[in-house]
Length: 429
Image 1 (cartoon, one colour):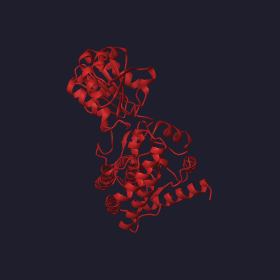
Image 2 (cartoon, one colour):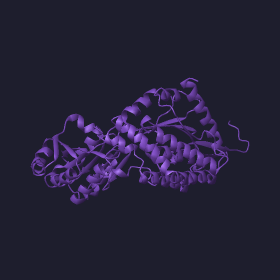
Image 3 (cartoon, one colour):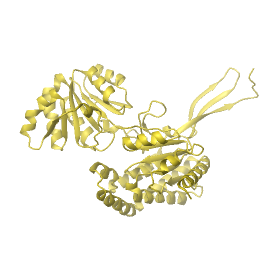
Image 4 (cartoon, helix red, strand yellow):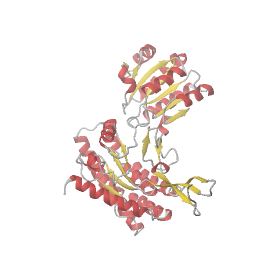
């Protein structure tokens, strides 16, 4: 069987499963999800063994620390997958949700109602926890899922997919064959082959680095929801609480630097820079952050860097402002107020997540209104851009598109809609 034939068979099974999923009641779907969560916890040792093999191979292959961190499935992350599935089970079923209702002058009644999208392909790198998150969310929303993880996580993904399917079948005899499937080959040609099947596949959601997402978008013949990268920024306004600003900058950069909602640039109002920058830099340097500063910030920080052995301070280059480091590297730039901060973010950012720290409500409202990003924060860390943190349960991904889903994508974003029309013999004149 050729690769194209393999992908066609996979997609046809998914299409049949999507049709069968429309017949599952919410209670039945929830029972399957809870069984999946229980089985993940019960099979934690099996999951860790497979993951340890992936990590060992990743180290041999020279994966970066950021990618190895994404690949890791420790006790906390395994528990997080189970918790995410239970949270999804506890959420209202989005299928059948009434979006809009109207009655026309001729008596025709119209209901706009949420329905499953159908067959969704999830393409992702490194993070094997996406296997459980994506499958759980898609299943609750009535969609069949085809998972295509990276070769670096193939053992972890295989074990997790097997566990999810085994648990679903044990919880319901009506769990459809093909509801959750993994592309088992690591051949890259599988992706364009799968994404050419417009009769069977309805949507693709890629998660990973910019290179992966651009490659998927360019080869796909089915719609793609995506974000290319997370160049997130935080602006410390002249009327900011300095201690809060330091805490939030450290959290947004250091809490987990290898993720798309970590900040890559810290913008500081010139009015506050001389007082704020040395304090913030000291806290960041303590955590091993390299600062890449513009000329003005560099002049302010040079003396502080000389007093602290190991402090990393270098001049910023033009290309740095649009860089996604996914590492302990942070750009620092002084600006002349909120307007200049907004202009910088809208020019160099990726429209993902950006924040302002200030006690000035007028400045905050201006920032919230004019920064063109999927999530914009006032006095909070950008690290909250996440489906779980937004109360959606486990997320399927984050979109910076303006058509369709935007920001964290949960259950509602995994549905389409159709119009149900109720008449009593009306004819159009």
